[in-house]
Amino acid sequence: EDHLSKDLPLRNKKIVITAGPTYEAIDPVRFIGNHSSGKMGFAIALKAAEAGAEVVLISGPTHLDISHDNIELKRVVSTRDMYEAAHAEFENTDVFIAAAAVADYRPKTVADQKIKKNDPSLNLELTKTEDILASLGAIKKEQKLIGFALETNNEEENARKKLEKKNLDFIVLNSLQDAGAGFKGDTNKIRIIYPDRKLEFDLKSKTEVAQDIITEVIKMYHA
Ligand code: CTP
Ligand code: CA
Image (tube, rainbow, N blue to C red):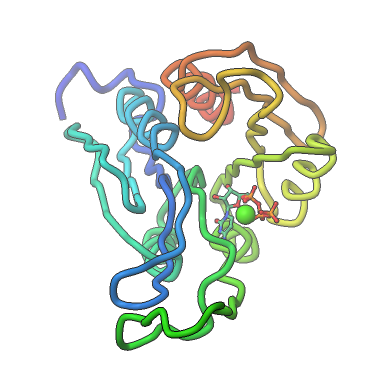
C-alpha cells in the first residue's frame, strides 16, 4: 500500500453504490425504463474512491463510464439483476448508497416474441419489483445504509417515512422545486435527513453534492 493513501478518511472502507435506471423487459425488443442519467451515483463513486474507499458501483444502463483504481463497475439491466448484485456484495460492505432510480413495477410476463400491433389497445399487467434498499434494511447489521428520495409533495414527511421504513442511517431528499435540480441535469438541491436532524444544502453541481454526501459518510466514522 502506498504512503499517499494511508491518511485518506475512508481507507479500508468498502462502499457499494447503485446508480442509473433499471430496465424491465416487455418483449425481446422493448422495455420499461426511466430517464435517470446515473450521474449522481457515478459522482458519489468517484468521491468515495478519492476518499480512499474500495468502491463497487452497480449501475443500470447508462452511457457513463468510470475509471479509477479503487472502483469496480458492475453493469446490470433489470431490477432483479441489481437486487442480486447488491445482495452479493452486502455482507462485507461498510456503507451502501442507493442512488439508482429503480423501476417500481415490471411486466408480469415477458412476451417470447415481439408483440405485434394487432389490436387497437394493449394492456400490460405490471407487478411490483423487489425493493432493493428495503430488503437490505431488513438484514443490515453494522452496515450504514443511505437512500435517496425524490418527492413532489409532502417532501420531508415522505422522505422520513422512507428513512424509517427502509431502516436507513440517512436519506438524501432531492428537491424538484428548484429549477435545475433533479433527474437528468447536472445540478441537484438536496436535504440530508437523519432520524433526529436535517441539513439543507444550496443548489450545486452533482460533483459537489456527491462530496457533501461523502463528507457526511466520513463524519460517521470520524465523529
Ligand atoms: N429503491 C430500491 N429498490 C426499489 C425502489 C427504490 O432500492 N425497487 C431505493 C432507491 O434507490 C432510493 C430509495 O429506495 O434510494 C427510494 O426510492 P423512491 O423511488 O424515492 O421510493 P420508493 O420506495 O420506490 O417509493 P415511491 O416511488 O412510491 O415514492
Ligand atoms: Ca420508486
